[in-house]
Length: 114
Length: 111
Image (cartoon, rainbow over all chains, first blue to last red; front, side, top):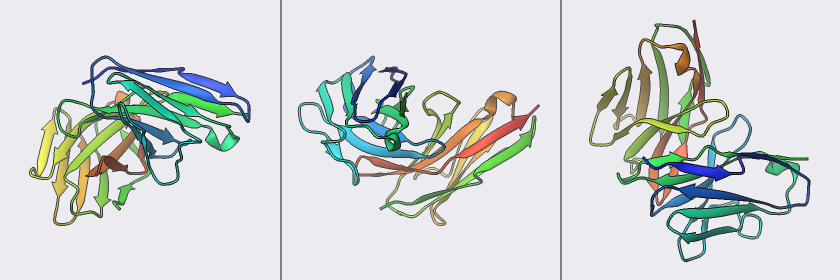
C-alpha cells in the first residue's frame, strides 16, 4: 500500500480566504483523488487529479472553488477558495494502489472556517 | 448512478461478541466492494475488500460476504475487541473512476 501524507493536518481559517492542501505519496501512482468528508458524514468525491492536465470535477464541484494541481505522479494540491463556514470539513487525498481498484487515503486535513 | 445504503448507523457490542454491518447497492455493474475503518482523527483505512467473482473472503477476525443477486454485501467482525471501535464505511464501484460510499457505521465495543 502507498504511504500518503497531507499538509496541513488541520487549520482554522477566516471567511473569504483560501487554503492550499498538499498531498504527497511515497511512490508514483496513476490515480489521485480528492474527497470531502463533512462532520459525521460519508465521503464525497470532489475531483480526480490528472497529471499534466486539468482535474476532472464531480457534479457540484467547480474549478474556481477547488482548483487542483498535479505536477507529477507523487504530488497534488487542492485549494479551497473564498472559504465560507460551509467549507468546514475534512479533506482527504486518495490514491489507487498497484492492485486494481484498491484505494488508499491520507490522514486528512481538518478545516474549520470561522 | 450507484446508490449505497449502509445499516446500522450505530452498533454497540460487548467485547468478544460478533458485529455485522450490511450494505446494499443499486448498480449491477459494480464489481468491487471495499470496507474501510476510520478511527477518530484519521483517514479511512482499507481493511478488506471483495470482488464480484467471489462470494466470501476472510482475513483473521474479519470476513466479507457478497450476494450479487440480491446486491448486498456484509462485514463480519468476530471476537470483537475495544480497538475495533471506529466508524466503518462500505463502498461499491467503480463507475468510471468513482466509488460510492455508504453513510458509515459507528461501532462501539464495550469492554
